[in-house]
Structure formats: C-alpha cells, structure tokens
Image 1 (cartoon, helix red, strand yellow):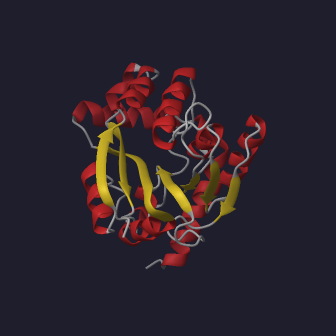
Image 2 (cartoon, helix red, strand yellow; image 1 turned 90 degrees about the vertical axis):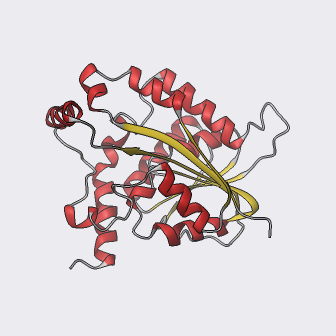
Length: 255
C-alpha cells in the first residue's frame, strides 16, 4: 500500500504538471469578462472593500491558492494577502499573474493541511477547490480554525457533483473524450485515499466545520457564478454538467 508521504508527493507532482493549463479550464480560471465581474462581486461580499467603505484592511490567507484566484481578488480590494500552496508550479503562475496586475501578495510554499503560521495570524481564511484533495479533512478544518483570530472568518468555496442520469453520463463521456481527459486527475490509489473526493457536499462540509468547533456555520449556493459559467458552456457541456458550486462560512468562537 502506498504510504502517505508518497501520496502527498504524487498530489504535488500532479498539480505541478497541470499548472501551465489550469487556468484554461472551465470553472478553474476566469475566462470571460462576466465571470470576472461575478467573482469580484463575491470577493467584495467576503472580504469587504476598504477602497470604498470603512471596512478595515484584513489579513487574508488563501490556503491551497493554486494559481491565486482568490488571493488576487482579495489583494485587488486592498487587503494584506498570503497565498499558500504545495505546488511550486501553481505558485509560479500565481506570481506571474500578480506581477502582471501589479498586486502585492506574499506567496508561500506549504501544505494546505498544516499551514506554517501561528494561531490567530489572519482575519479571514479562504479555500477554493481544496477540500476534495485533503487526506485528513477533519483535522485540517480544526487546524484552519486556529489560524484566524477569535471571531475570524473561515470561507470554503467548493462544489459537488452527482453522477447524473444516463444522458448526463453519456454527455460526460463525450466531453472527456473531446477534451482529451483531465490533466490534473490523480491515479486511482490516490483518489481512493481522499475522504471527500466523491463527497465534498454542502452537508458534509458543514458537518466537518461544526465538528472542528467552527461556529455560525452557513452554506449557500453560488447561484450567480453558476449561471454565468453555464452560459459559456456548449449544449453538450451543459448536459454533462452536474456540478453545483457552494460557499460554506463560519467563525472561530470568541472564547
């Protein structure tokens, strides 16, 4: 049986290999102007906009930042942002995007399951598309909750997908065949080691957050982003698409 260090190495190598094309995929990078508007609106709702209101500048950690989408949106609003990822390839893409946008973000290499920061370092911790690739999600959520100050915000942006009916399954197969497959798919032995690989549902994420001691847990669908992304899909892609985005939020208790 493959041991955990080897699994982690495989996961990192997979993202290093796929970094160059990650942003080119639907639901990964921002490919259209209206998608950018929708994500910017969501970021403003999460972080607040110190440029236009009396909202204070926040210390933000984007954990498992990948190519930096959420980190860059937070930095664009004027916040003090750190992006953490285990993949140097993904961080290299994030750094280049930050330079192109003239944004100041601290980019750190490290494991999303055990970020190398002291308790209470941040005001907000955000993750996007991360939970399904965690080996130990329950322990990770507990660790994440310590990284924000008491009363600090934890935000998990994710999605879940069902197998769908016969039409959806056929459409999925056709889409995969046309696209040449998934360039960040894990080998089977790694995929089977990930507790949330097939079950990062809103209910599962909310339950794990509560069990980690995170309070005031709320879940809502990301309806606007879903609508905009689907508007750019072909008819076949829409038939194949059983993905539903959601946002789960909670706060570290004050005591």
